[in-house]
Length: 316
Image (cartoon, rainbow, N blue to C red):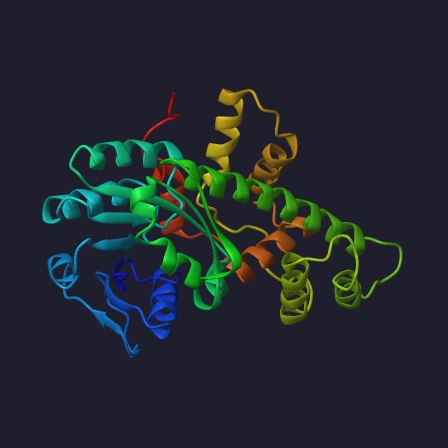
């Protein structure tokens, strides 16, 4: 019988929403965060006082999700957990860790008889709450213990086991690069519409585009929603990013795979600090809409951008 009890460390906008969704679907969830969420009362969801208590409450094999910002913090949490776990226990890194770091971490844990699954998660806060998209990497003998939950938390057909350790986070990284290119193209389109010789009804155009056009998409839907809410492009032009696509551009150079659109979108994000342009404002609005990214600068996200990748490119 499937062990339907899971731990989740990190109860921010993704971890907490996934925890609530899982609890509502009958899973027993033990959550832990240094800053426990207040005012949350959901059947099947309990909060542990510390990581040791969380581990004590989990049946074996223990299955523990980590939803924290990428970087050294992941190594710290894994380092704290590993001595407390038993052979066969599973850690699932659901954040945006660099795929090379995930390969390194999985190898180190495998030597201790533990498993690491790298779990790329897409869909933003809404997906975490209502149905996400998961791209995972890791050993099949570990994956079989968690894929029931991941399939239940995903939208229909929104789950895939990509391959060995590191592949889930690599696939998610490529996904984020494609996302950047799409955001850039939509943003540039908004600049063209805004600068036409006569005033255009951009809200209506976006609405029409999402009914039968080739570019219909969730991003176009978000663009219309935020355009209407903000009554135009009345937002700062710059949204902090956590730097994953910078890693992808670097990887592409090592792999000698040309990605001019994705690379240019990163350059444009940097250029977006010029607050007078429309296209970066449009991108900022959509990023705020799907991921809750704050407008303007954010010290925590900036730190993750600089320190989220611990190691370098993982050679074969």
